[in-house]
Image (cartoon, rainbow over all chains, first blue to last red; front, side, top):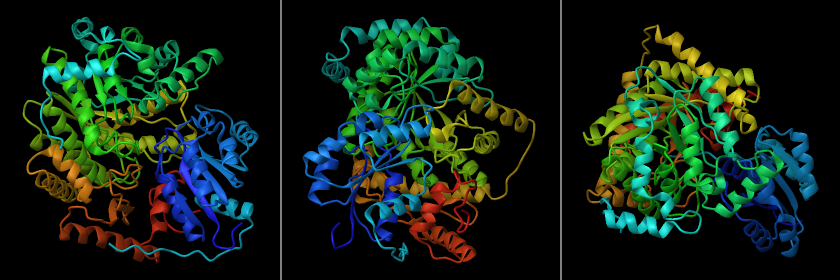
Length: 149
Length: 476
C-alpha cells in the first residue's frame, strides 16, 4: 500500500463495450478517496497489466457484462505477475453466458486468482467497501460532487 | 474528409473483393446468386413488406446462440410459443469485434461441450450457407442484430445468406460499442453496408435498415437519440436504402416515451427523402432489470403499454431473465407473450395522456437544433457534419466507451421521471431548452432535499433494477 491515496486500475475487459458501470464506479471510488485510472471499455489483459505496473496499483478491478469473462480473464493473473504487479484483483458483472449459478461462477473466478467476485446486481457502495476492506483503508467521509451546467 | 456521397458499383465490388478471402470466399457472396435466393423466399419471409404492411404493432425478441441447430430451434420456439412476428439473429460479441478466430474457438467449444460458449450466433463462421439454412428453416422474416462497428463482412455474409434487415449504423454501432474506431472510419464502413443494402433494393430485394436508437441504453435523452438515428437514416438513404426503421429506447416515463416516438416519426417523415419508407421501433427498457422475474414482467408490461399507446411499427421485447444474462427460450417467449397481452388489451381502449404535445414539441425543437448544428458543421454535408459535430461536442451522448464522443453530457431524471440533461457540455441546444431541463431538475432536487449531483445520476441508473423509476434517496 502506498502512503498516498490507494490506487485502483479499472476497466472493462476483452471485446466488451459496456462503459456505464465503470464510469459510475470510477466516480464512487474517487468520492471514497481512491486514485482511479479508468482504462475504459474493451481493455486487453496486457493493458490491465501495463497500467497496474505503471501506476503501482493497489487494486485491479475488472468489469465484464457480456458473458465472455472466463475466456477474457484467462491468463490475466500471469500477466500481472509478469509485470511485477502484486495487487488485489476484483471481477464483477454478468460473468457467464446463460443461467449459470453464481456460486459456481464465483468459485471458477476465485480459482483463477481473483480476490473478490461480484455479480452484476452488486451496488457500487458494496464494491467500494470490499476494496477498502481488502486494502485495509481507513473510512473516509465521502464527498459529493455538485454538477453545474 | 468523408463525404455523404453514394459509392459507385465499382467501389462496392472493390471493397467486397478486399473484405472477403480469409474467412469467407468471394464466390460465397456472389450477388446474382444471393438475389436469386432472396427471390425464392415466400412473401411472409420478406422483412420490409411484413413491416411496412403491418396493421398492428409487431413484436420481435432478441435471440442468438452459437450452434446452428440450437439457434434455429430457439427461433422456432419464439415464433411458435412466443408469437414473434419478426425474428432476430443476435450476433456474438467476438464477431462484433471482427475477432473471427475467437468466435471460431467459441463455436468449437460450444459444439464440444453441447453448451453456449458465445453470447450470440457467429454468422461469419457459419457462412452464407449456414445463414440460408436459418432463413429456410424458420417461418418469419429474420433480422441481423449485432453491434459491429466494422460490419462490412457481416453484412456481405448475412445479406447473401437471406437476411432482409440489418440493424445498426456508423454512430449507433460505434459510440456505444467500441473504443477502437473514429467516426470517419465507421461512416466509411457503413457506407459500404448501406450501399450493399441499396444494391439489393435496386434489384427488387428490399433490405430494411434499422439505426440502433437506444445507444448506451442508459438515460439517453430522446432528442439526442432521435437526432442520431435520423442522421443514420439520411446516410443510408444516400446509398440507396429505401426502408428505414428509426429506433428509440424506452426511458420509462409514459408521456416522454409517447412524445418521443411520435417526434421521431414526424422528424423522420420531414427529413428523410420521400423515396424512403420510414417505420419505427420501440425498444423495451434497455437499462438494468430487476432480478425478480415477477418485477421484470412489470417492466415489460409498462413497455407493452407504452407501445400500445404510441403504436410504433414494432417493439423489441425483453425477457424476465434480463438481469441474469442470456435468457432461456421459455423466458424469452414469456416476454413476448406479456407484451402481446398488454398490446391486445390496450388496443381496445382509447387513452389520451396529458402533456404529450408539449413534450413532443420540446423534443422536436431540440432535435432540429441538433441537426441544424450538424448540417452547419458540415457545410451542408451530413457525413462531414456528423464527424465535426461530435468533435466539437455540439452532438454528444452520455457514458460513451468511445473517444469519438466527448461524453460531456450527463443525464438525470426530473421529478416526473423524464430524462433531462444535468450537464450540457457543448451540445447544440438553445438557452430556453436548457432552462426547461434545469428547472425540471431543480424541482426534483427541492423535492428530495439534495443538490444536483452525480449521486443522483447513479441512483437513477440503478432505480429500475431496484424496483422504481426515479432514484430517490433512502430507497434502499
